[in-house]
Length: 505
Image 1 (cartoon, rainbow, N blue to C red):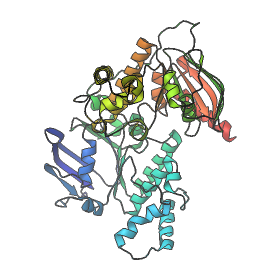
Image 2 (image 1 turned 30 degrees about the horizontal axis):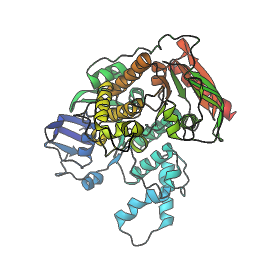
Image 3 (image 1 turned 90 degrees about the horizontal axis):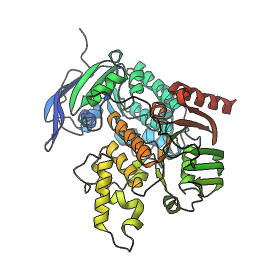
């Protein structure tokens, strides 16, 4: 007789006010199964995770563990049944060491009066060996790269005797090589009998790592089956209800004698960037890729006035650019959208309008008081142009989906009349439907306004589909350029791998 599933959800529904977040959802997760959960923002994925972890109670339906109902499910009961959730923020203690983060839950659970650090170090080393990884046990977690912090979170879940680990967008901040390492760890967990529910927006990751796929849309499960039954187009259609445009972006024709929008000649930034020269024309989208630490973000910050240790020459439309501050860069027509919109790009508790005007307060409050009428009119125009989905411009940005938050960030900078837009990870954590819309908006701006765009991304399909040219970087130097028919995902990956190999040779 076959054993029951590890977890079975039967007819789960959940409402928040008048919104039905989950509608009669049934799903099973087998022992040691790797299943991917896909869906756009607002599709019900997060609600499902919180119900399984006991944070929310379903309005209808039941959950079975090993074929039996636990009764009322709360977080403690869920953990007791082996459920561990690794959220995007990882919920680690950044100022504590690796061993302290790993041993803390055990210490609290056992209610010991003294800390046996020898035992703690032994447990930490054993669980890292079990994952076949090596970390400095005495390093503060905040000093680790994103991949290292992710490993600590996984190791902590394993120490808690997890039977199911739910990973919410675990590869958002990881490079291609780090993703491969993450997948190896996930497969090792499977070999040890641990199931993994993998939540991701990235099609290729879904197809590579999962054995089965469940797709949600508008609170309903709309597709499910073995991963072999899906391809990228089928997943996209299930998530969005439509076929998305997969054509390549082509920049508008331009005068060959036109002045470059951005010119860099022999630009170096401290010890991080060395002798970079490039040109970006009006209406052009130029990609910048490379592994973490290659110098991409440092170069962007130098152009935006966030680094002062800059040598060489920078120009905007032929005029010298030497920003002593962010204000100088904005005045010159430069805008920068950071990768981490939550901590660097937005005032989450403030309204869309407050966020929109924050980058150009001199424009809306020239005499120390706010021109409320102008601020309202121009914010509403931006709201419409950026296709933001919200009740209005007065709602807090924290209530928006990731895709709409990103549109607010981009739209805010465009209200400064920017001529050069630097996008660092423009669609990180954004679902596939919103990603397509954001790309479409960017292309419209290059076509209609002649906006020049520098797109920094680890998403090779995004770069190949949306850029006229892509430059690769390694160790602070430009290492290659791909354009036209030569600009493919495989060529980009090969170019980056070649640069890395040369660097380590």
